[in-house]
Length: 488
Image (cartoon, rainbow, N blue to C red; front, side, top):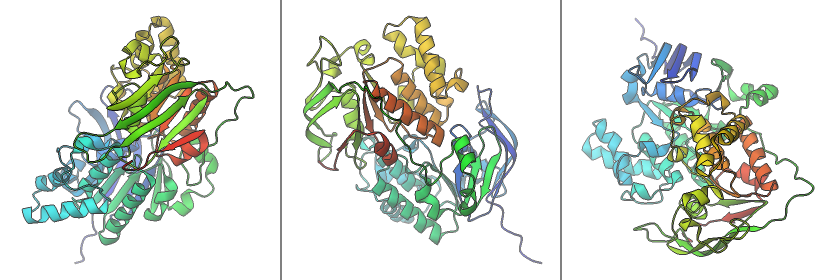
């Protein structure tokens, strides 16, 4: 009598999931079979359910008030909840996975919960940290990590578990190019030495193609558009990919033509001898920085993880008090208030002059409806409610958020949340816009729309500042680039 064949890694039969409080299904009519050991790149437009599918496979859903399912989803022949110990998931928001105050303890946490013998835990912790190119020791406080460093630590925690099914949701989206390369190399080593099944959501398609054996493209309305090896999926389907807003390996953005009579740049924000150093850190993020933010210009802030891009963005946005140096307004930004420190402004003045987009969009949501979120800033800035609602709807339509107008912002996909955070910053019509990773989680169509929108803002006389690792965005949009080195 022969041995029974191994269980499939993943089997979905007409599977669907609808989040509680939502009228539309996040995923529906999904029929999918993944064999053990396959390496699958999962693509699809924003809102097609990629992150929802990963969460479902990881066993994070049940039907006790959090949503409704249909069809069947199995992992290694069992219900996903029964296979959790064999799965490892890196979420789109890495901060949501960090639970301990020190980096090494955070990686060890999962191993301890799985009952790994004590003498094996710390060798596996150190190996996982080394695998992702961890630049610090195991005692690094997790509350001092940049978004990219959080992402790397979350991945280390999952790799240490040595899962049979590895589920990665944009694992390098917040990483600098060198760090992203280290992560891909680490995953290649893991996949070469273990029969791990991989399901990966990423928009940096070209860089990941050497690691994957199959591409599955989800449709926005449910089901699968394309399924096959990369050599087949990415040949002869250019029109389909463009129509559905799906990333391809060779897609490059192009900035729209500038107007013939573009406004002349004016100074909006200046920094003088600006320095920042986290508590307990042995080096400053940056020191004695002199910078001018100008209207009618897009300024890109680039540099490796931990170099201080997000910190600088917060300082320019008036959200933090400088430790040393000054961040001051110019006359073109605040008539009658030239030379004033932007961090000292009352919220009503700040919100109508400088708009900020955080790296984590959930950190800036304040209401329970997309419609209310978009109208809140203009109303606080003094705009009548009817005018605020009208402006909110215009932005929702421009950024493809009208379909989720009544939804809770916290139930949106990662890409939808990012577009909402940008829209809320634009809603108050600020003269300067400071954006931290504005294209995170976007599909091809909404990425192109974001590029067009930001270019239009700069060309109309706004000052646009981008803290980003998105090289394609920098190449297409930036008029000027500031590079922050590590350990300035």
